[in-house]
Image 1 (cartoon, rainbow, N blue to C red):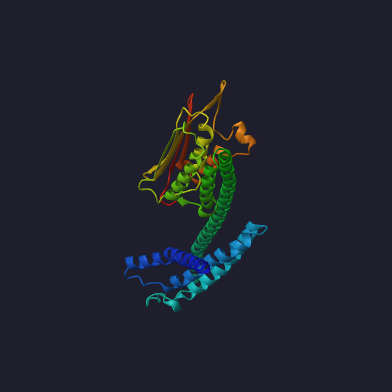
Image 2: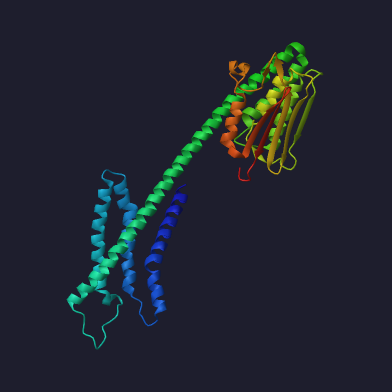
Length: 366
């Protein structure tokens, strides 16, 4: 971590230095190349170090000492006023004694410049340098405040990601007991009917729990998720009567290695067995397929009608609310947090059937 921070600081320093060189040295070099008879003024390059000093004095010291304390603007302008005075003094000394730094020597037919001529010319040069110093200060301020804004935005994004991960953990922690509760109810129903099947169900449950509690992380391969669904369907088959028809299709095709959030489809499949067994004349349909980085889960089951009312397999039904179930509301929230617009959940109801289609497009970087 320290090595990464050191590299970032070195990169930042070199980037700033390159920008300053381009702004203050390159124009003089290009001007000299355009006028071969004009000698290169070394004092211009010496003066660049003053601009560099003003830049880094603002970037590392003045802005930090001003904007995080009371009277920030007064501090900022006060510090920079003093800094400009010092910088102009140094620039004047450099310009005044430029002849010793490689400047042009007086011509033979021209008299040596007087002190008044030096003063008048220095005023014009320093006026231009004041503008350049203000631009350097503005450049440093913009870069520093931009860096601070990026850090704040990165910190805010990290906080949002932490909250998002925490909410996903909470949703999954709700889902696991919900899944276990429904599975235990199925095994409990089997004990009175067939102890042998109940024993098989307990064995299947142990495999499911191993996956739910230990083998799942933020994402799992589609192959693992389909194996889990297959085990769950095998467990649920033990309690189905021979009158109920069940059609199951689990086919990942060439997309077995796709990474997907675990336990996304189990809520839909649970609802098929929970509500579809009350209408044996309508077959239960479960299909999970994948193609072109898109996973599609389709389920269909009959509706239990009571008089003029139809009971939907939703988390808003009275049974689910009374038992503390989470149902589709949990699924909706997980899909929104993990995939956003890449997930589409469509529910269709007819007079006798309840159909759900969940499509998830897996981006290559997920």
